[in-house]
Length: 444
Image (cartoon, rainbow, N blue to C red; front, side):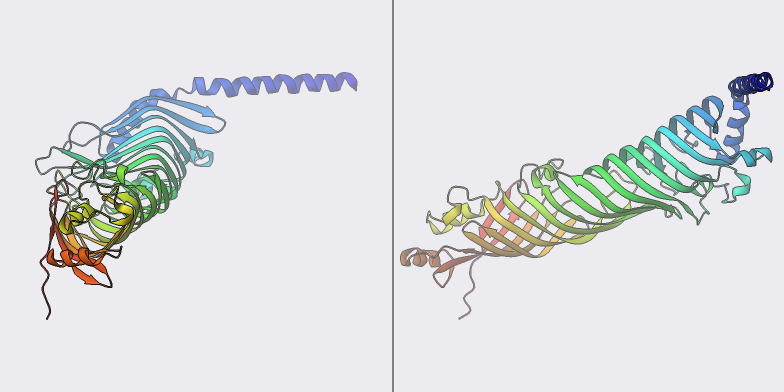
């Protein structure tokens, strides 16, 4: 019995070794890379674009296809370049489907994918295939149960009417994303109305127009040629933001909507990208904004933004304006309380905002300065000229003596309860604001 048992163990051991050797040998014997020209031809037919594949290989546990140096080029109406480049992709296959001679991808991992989305002035995007339909039967890669993206990059831009490359309006870097039920055919088909994938997304750095964010976390969904970022949290200019952002790619011009709440934003860093705004204000900003608009095929693709909101800036300065200094000059007195040493400083600025036609309008502005309180309204042009048109009333909060009040009346001040107030106007530009008093109209 002992001899038979040892013999059986030897047989089992030999069989295991042979099976292991076979498992290791099969991927080498089945050289899937020889089918690379057929795969490229098939994808070219289905995508309607030139496809490149550097190498194909196979593993058995799990049954997976490995793709190196995958690329899809722009169609002829777009400038030369790639829609997508992927350094490495691992696709796990459904064994049951393979037995029925069908290729079904259960999951896929994309390593270092770089995606360049470009819109033509006549409407189509470079990733579209006008001849494609949303039928999964014609494209076995149509629905993937799970997709993971590691260290990805996304860049979106428009072509100008001259068909030259326009500026980038959206980009995200260092992307890590996990999606479910990804419908590749739906993504490339203009006629698709399906949900094309949903999951979570992280990005180390993201920018939309001139606004930059870091360490973004959000839920993400692709549906009916729309992309939705929800439950968004990110770091922006030293502060934090939360909200939502969506893009609609179905029209001739892409459109976007966003609503965001923010706090702790550094005005110094926020204004730094703008030549007319750089160094014009300090302090920390909080508030909320709702913005929307079409992304136009022009050198300024976000010029059509419109929206509303409310912001508050605390503990800052407006060095170029020095409202208190202007008031001091008007009434010729030198003590304005806490602002005596720094007349450009303020405790808080609170205002509503309405953005339309490259102009920001505020119906109610409340400024609590150190020694000066201001109520005003007006607008600023953000088309590059930076033109200012604001008016209001500034009140000196420190009670003044008899002679100061008397001379202040001659300078156009209104005196109430021993305090002075001055109607004023601010014109000029952001770079060179001009402060002037408004002649008081006597109501008697």
